[in-house]
Length: 106
Image (cartoon, rainbow, N blue to C red):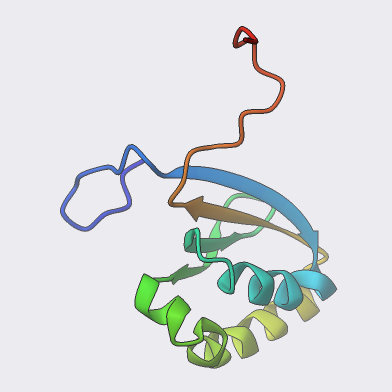
């Protein structure tokens, strides 16, 4: 993953992808924008085209990213009206969940 402007990757970030119905897009993005571990949100169409890329910084999250992203949320609402399903790619600043792996128990 190479989404930093300086070309370096962050080994402590990971990507999660979820599918949402168009009418639930804005609510899901608002929820994700309030999550302190989310660094970037990308909304993609079903054929993989990038529709919206929303970078979130720690300062934006602390200052209320939802208020900052209001124009973006308006664009997402318009997009959701025309598209039935979308994929949301979420870049997080933490280790991925450790469920179902084969690590030995103590």
